[in-house]
Amino acid sequence: MAAAAAAAASQSLRNRELLDAVGTTAAALSLAGSSFIVLCYLLFRELRKFSFKLVYFLALADMLCSLFSIMGGPANTFYCFAHDYSAHFFCVASFLWTTTIAFTLHRTVVKHKTDVEEFGFIFHLYVWGTSLATTVLRSIGSDNGRPGTWCWIQQGSTGKILHLVTFYLPLWGAILYNGFTYYQVNRMLNNATRMAVGISDRSIQSDMRADKKAFNRWGYYPLILIGSWAFATINRLYDFANPGHKIFWLSILDVGFAGLMGLFNSIAYGLNSSVRRAIAERIDTFLPESVKRSLPTLSRLRSQQENELTSLIVESNNRNNNAASNT
Image (cartoon, rainbow, N blue to C red; front, side, top):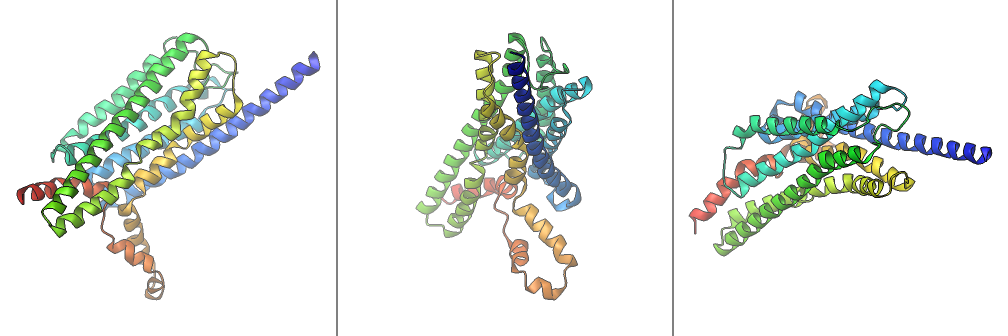
């Protein structure tokens, strides 16, 4: 019996160390990716448009979420609290910032409004206020921060229910909202494209094809949240239905994909043509002419038309109005 108990304890320790290694590695990759986007925003003035400012705050939330996730450690009460509450706050803020991007795109393309910058203060109040409220509510009936356990495990049904309500309920609400919003924008662009074809306006057709190509990329972004948190959601629901019984491989997928959310966001939202062009222009200033001629990619990036969110939300309203005036 003693040997069996020792073997079980040893296996549990190895599993815990592996989970910690996977989670730390994923969070470190997200920290690097989101920090890169934050740095680009701070260094390149031309990126400081309203649309990319939303991406900046998304990356900032991801960066801090990843940082506090790395800081978490079950052997120290303070770091457990830092992990539990700070990581919860900034992870909630992260997926809430994606809804502000979706709202901005929808209001400009579908509603034909150009007042999105007036919502800046409201966005901050909504994101940070909601994140704070859910973090405070989560602390009720929770034993987060208790040393000797994994920081992200909650004991008792009350704590588990509050975790589902304060994190996974708004998370899947954000996923549904983003998906519905992108569907409406996609339908609007399809209708505008058909209208441009009907009036045989080649310039408008070309513009709409460019916007449609850009949106085809953005339309997949709700899948980032699904891919990042699907395994975590399943794991929490399973833990709620079967307390005390863990599926190790599911826990690995949980911490791995959830930890990579910041990296996925930084690649999808942040590493767009504007950022690539800004970096290429800075590199271009330090390279001799002989090297520039051998690197045609830099020239293409400098002259590349920005067909992603920054231009889409600024220009789509004017294009739709022009198309309507020609009918």
